[in-house]
Length: 348
Image 1 (cartoon, rainbow, N blue to C red):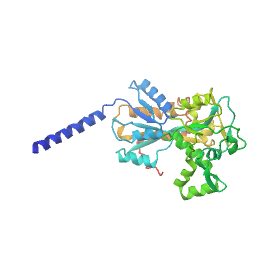
Image 2 (image 1 turned 120 degrees about the vertical axis):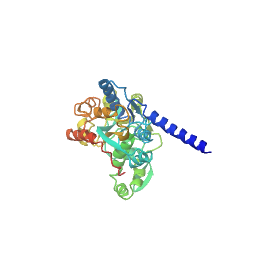
Image 3 (image 1 turned 90 degrees about the horizontal axis):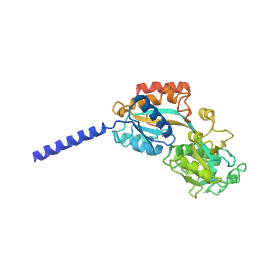
Image 4 (image 1 turned 180 degrees about the vertical axis):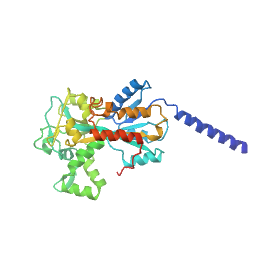
């Protein structure tokens, strides 16, 4: 019996050793997450590989939520080194990471992006108010003091100054950081303009979010997956349809689509960077500190990402559509990388 126990222990040690060896075997950087951040990380990966001669990083577009799920699955070669995100990490995601042993996470802001509302180049012009999105897209809306099933079918019913067009919007799914930002910056922001909903938010934020950002299910809002190309293709083939995606992707498709204004403000790089455009957000990458020094080239890849040449003003990512951070903030981000200080647990 003693020999059996000793043999079993030896096998267990061998299995652990084999696992560690397998974890150390990956010879490339792996990033996964936001479809909005995907083209930026891909471009950095290309430049890093060209400059260093190292193996090109693997970059996956899974959506922000999907990226965090993979990132938080544990430590080791079987999980990504980096999570790309078009919104900040949530408290629940941070806790999920911690539960799997992902304890020290670096949060790196890389720049800004705006969420645009686009239509076909030949389509009608739209100038939305911030309340229009809540009224048009929420499953239930506040009407005459009561919450009722959304009765609006046309944009002109929501706002008489909008075109007499059917409400039909194609946008990101619930796994997308763009969807999270859209819910917060468009639907919830619009709902907050109603005193009753503002009071509900102050009293019970969870109940407020359920009221404001539960999207209608009658086919007038359509989840279109993580592929923004599919939305652009739909807009060019579906007269009157509107699409929701990041400004950086709009820049690549200006010959096919045009964008709406919100409260009279157009989504320009200047308006997005200053926050004047209402639906603006920050973009991030998250890095496992435990993988730095283990995954070959991860430290060099991060340094390339935060370099002036990449994310600085006039850098190659700005040319690809990223709205750069102010010079002082960008410098602070670069300085912070040297300390490798982990992020604190998010408040929400």
